[in-house]
Image (cartoon, rainbow, N blue to C red; front, side, top):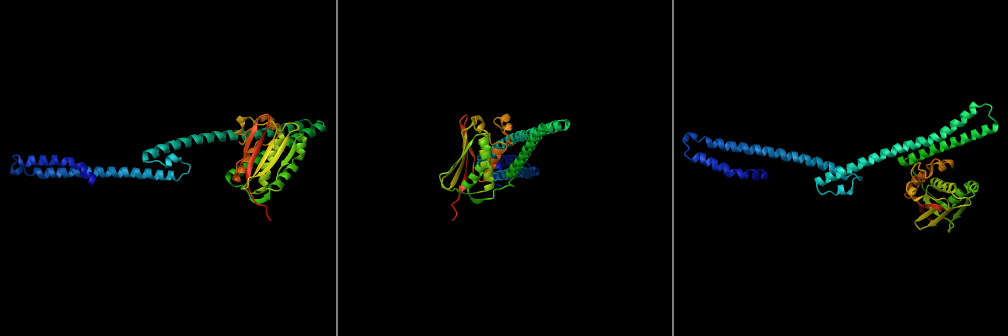
Length: 342
């Protein structure tokens, strides 16, 4: 009502002046009806103005309430940028909201491109062993006079590609479970040094075939950690196998354990061919290969490092790589340390 009075106040002198002129400037007795009509018109004018003002204020209030709800909803969204949550007024909040939505749209386009590339990579990785299997089996079936040695060779190669195909499917299943939260680490207390020695023993023949020397470097007699032993075994095994694959002849793969007190650091290092700097930020991506042809010749699903990354991150840690082309690579990750049980 105060706002209404302020709006109407400038018109009051004019109305008073007009009514005085009409009433007192030679107005006859039978013209005295003009003054009530004038006052009534003024009242109608004021009421109309009041109604318009009330409707306008209510409309603005509804808009502000609606914007307030949007803003409150956005403030509870942790993904909204800090600049939006700290907006001082509606205009700034809406501007930041627009920027946020633009960024979200760009992110969705990027994810769509990633999905398309991922599907293409999966199709390509599955197609390669399938076509190889098909080719070997068709050759054996189409030539009944094929000598036994060649037939055995082709069937062996077909079986090798079947195994590779199965490994790709198992690795894809594992990554999907990690990303969906279905597969979670079963935390136990165990000696990481015992696990490392078991992995080295299981890879000795593979290392000898490549003339690679497997070494364990552990200054302390034990390194007790809290982690999932089967998953950590998979990480150490994958890293060691990669190291052996890409080592130079007469090279060395060293698995080192060290303690910082609260954490045990696991390092898998080699003096092999190394990784170019432009590839190092992408080697943990699914199906990413530094050298596609050479990687497929050595086998593998192209998902080993991606699985290592998922397993380590599921333990609340990060896996890192330091590599120099031609000089070798070092992969490392930490685990929560646990005092030796009594």
